[in-house]
Image (cartoon, rainbow, N blue to C red; front, side, top):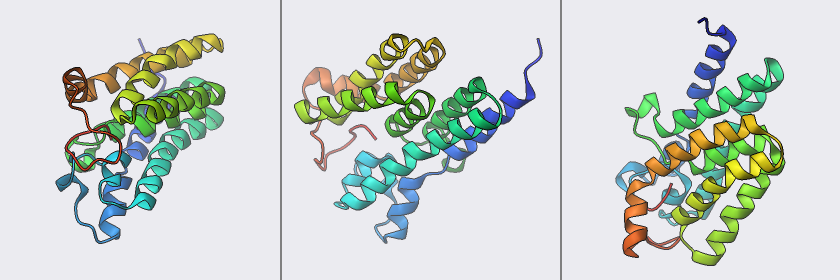
Length: 203
């Protein structure tokens, strides 16, 4: 069985783009030290928020989602829809397991949303709305992410995008695995609220 070299290129390109640790870079440029030594130790927007800099957290959220969306769009238009989905999925892996940080990255929520927005924007918007609704209701980032991730494959199927649904199942499974410590705390009622400066919420 031969593998399309363009799909391999999409995977490599998406992974390298997704590996850019924007949270780490922004916090360092702001003179606030190493984000990996603060809060949960993750490089995502939720942990950046614990620095007290909402602007940095928002920028991290946009850039982390944008890098995944950009990877998906570049290879969708340059090669094919399957290549775009591969690139977007690889960007998610790059964020969670960046080669530059010894494969210790974020939890992938923003990149997950970015991939879906680029691959099928109605699905992405509804998944974002699901996250936002849960965040406003429960004020717990990890719970919002888990609910949104679970809804993503179903929403993709509702919009007749089985290809996106398959990708969403794969990414959601990884996202749940990355959140296993959060899930344990949720079951104990110990997961911190959004904005709390306690250890290890979703990032």
